[in-house]
Length: 183
Image (cartoon, rainbow, N blue to C red; front, side, top):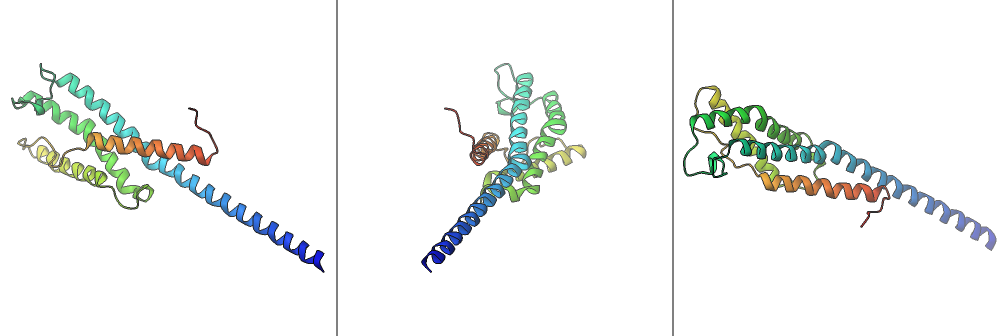
């Protein structure tokens, strides 16, 4: 009788161990799938867009800086009509499409955020885009009295958010895949 109890007990323990191991494996696979989606559909594209935007803005500043190296918008002397026309061209063709793509990522993939609530920096990004949309709409009507968004672009903060989110998820992905970090 005792051998039957031991056999049944071992069989049950084996079944429970197999079940729990399978459950743990399934949870790990689900987490990896989510991390992959976060990287591929939100944090990766956001990181690429913020990096590209930072680099193209630096190129704009390099080409359009005043003799003292400062932006026409960060100077005591207001921007000239030529500088403003060049700014409008860059905003319409480069900066606004980039920041709209960032906003669209936030709006279309909010389910992939790592945080439980919408980070304020992403709300500021969305507000900045809306501010530029009204500014460019005025330009289309021939009104050039405003050249900036009513909400400042959180350049450094959004870049850090995207970079940190991307790097953290890449570490998590490597961990879930069983890769060890070098160094």
